[in-house]
Image (cartoon, rainbow, N blue to C red; front, side, top):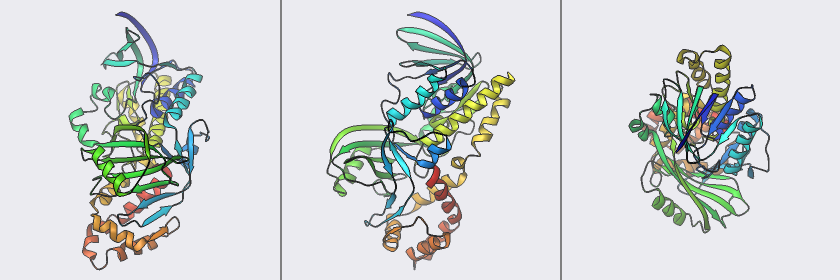
Length: 398
């Protein structure tokens, strides 16, 4: 193989929402940026439920666009094991995730970023900040002042930088499997918390378009395919499978450190997913933008030390989706037994809880567990935390 040497101010590994947003922030400030994407086509394969709230899109100064939106969503329901449900009316979108990723990366290239697809990074010299990659039957060495790792939940950049022990990280990933089905009539997003079928996670039926839905499962259990089939049969979901995907989602909080000398880690690579609903698009875009802005500050100061770059983590840990209440709330929810979820469903019936007060929600919980109040002892302690987590999640978590 022939060899080539390239030099940039910033090298971004991964062209998902985190990587593209980081590249955009750097390139629009006049810096030389390269984006390295392992797959031949940005956004393919899709490994995502594809939901995003209106608030999250607006916060990042992005306007809804038919180019990447497949459905407008106005309702999210949590459906209990007995068939009852509670709904929250909040605006959002079901994306065409591949087109959304392509939209974001085009925004980055439009301001000057170079994009290399089918570019597989195989080594990283963390001392000299040199990436070694294969590209079009060539070996390319890319030297950069700052490397931004946005290369997914099993991030090589984080591992090579000493920020991630892969053996330990595997315990922090939850398995996800999803079918795209035609002939499924659903209006909005339906979420099912069923610890019997999906321990530590949940199942979903998300409106994708007219008569099309994403039907999926996220769980720590290994047999995701059989468990999703069981759910589909149980709920009598009769549709034709027109696509399928699988992946891994960080669900136990972020990496302890997301920076090193000349290195920043963003998106799923940083473990920034919301542990309540496992949404990662919003957090990826936010952490990616902050990583890009921090890189710009670093370049202006000509300081690429871990000490200088630590400001990145301080910034993103102040974001709503880094709030510790989210992780604590997820633990409480998954401690609920099927009986507890069923009792909650019996009381709630079929209702919209969008505007129920905190006191009203507390009454719902107390009545749901009557007369077994002792069950609530470990739960009541975390009630303010759970309420706070759901308040954050309504805006940011999907």
